[in-house]
Image 1 (cartoon, rainbow, N blue to C red):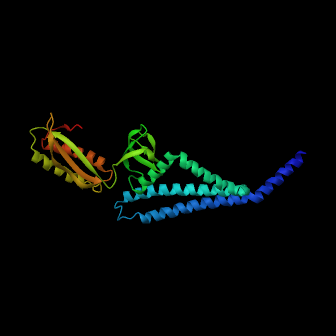
Image 2: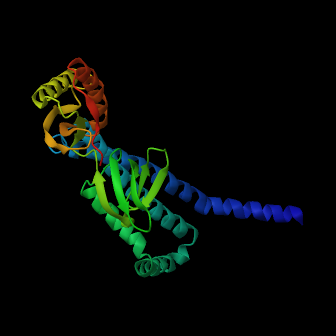
Image 3: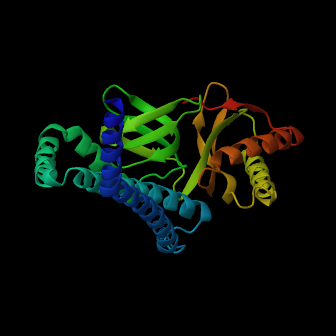
Length: 287
């Protein structure tokens, strides 16, 4: 009896394999190949579409390609998985194809009625990506609802549904795109160094202006800073007075995300220059 049952199972398995297994394997292999080919073609296309005339720096172009590539890969993956699943189910249950497509129609109605937040996330994500509000690798500040408040960090991933940020503490935040209200991109196009310093009341401001200008020129001439600085630091004017001294504003224009490195090197050189010229720095202006 056991032998007969084993023979029956083997016969059934062989019949099933002959009728379905090979077709399913072909479907899976074709789906895998199509996904790889589509991703490669999209990547090549994006590198051609993202032109230097629109995105002048290499960093901007790379960020744009990575961001659009993330969107394209997500769409391709979803489409391939959906079609593959339908084909496999249709292969296993040919008589249920009509019911399957009917169920898909019913499911779409349910999604339309009950998943407004998901739809909002997707629509908002599409606007963020197509409008180039921020890209993978950008430093941003996001104002989010649902009690999340302000979140700052670097964009590690951006899909049509979520934005993934890593803050300075290393924490990773997954934020639904539909929950984002205001976005501030700190690394789009160019950045500015905007500093306010306080010097003693008896400071010769004309001399201070010359010192800061010279420091800015030295800073821009440094090999590792030449490609970071667009306009070297300069004294833009006197803001006012504090209880410690005169508040002056120093500005500079840098390439995207280069303002922090510029500020650090500027203060390092400025300290030496002020000591050499006997100008007393009493602090930075408080916000």
